[in-house]
Image 1 (cartoon, rainbow, N blue to C red):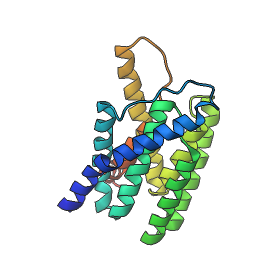
Image 2: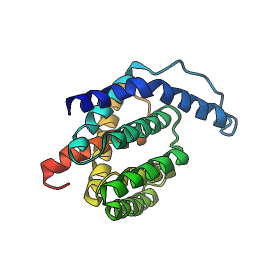
Image 3: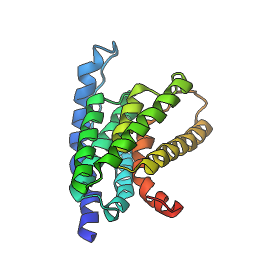
Length: 210
């Protein structure tokens, strides 16, 4: 378990440069379509590195909950890439959510609980769809598909907990950021979903369900 934990924590060091290059290539490809100037950025910032290690650390309890090492590394890499795209460019690529959904489905089939994962994903679409209609622009369609893709890695109850934790983290960040800046700007939801997906296992165990 010690070597496994070290491998997961070192994963951002290996995947980080690849994630940055993929995100920059994606942004360059769609810059013309979005009618926005493209300004290349050199590597990951210190905040993004810290975010990656914290997200990887939060996924470790999932290994004790039955998730495989390969599945944990895939979940970590894809979710960090999604968080980076949303934080930098305000977009969650649907193809990335599809890859995450397919990987989660394969993991659930291997673990023998595909039906539960499918129910969790459908539940996520319904709940996020209702919130999308109520929020009126406060939640994007990319958030819905990303949330549904993450749900395939969780149980239905954990799916609801995931959304609650992500909303709580986002609200706390919004309150703290307003204390340092008077500007009112949109806060991407994807990074908080990424952080919350790892926290659902320990928090769910603490609350008494998985």
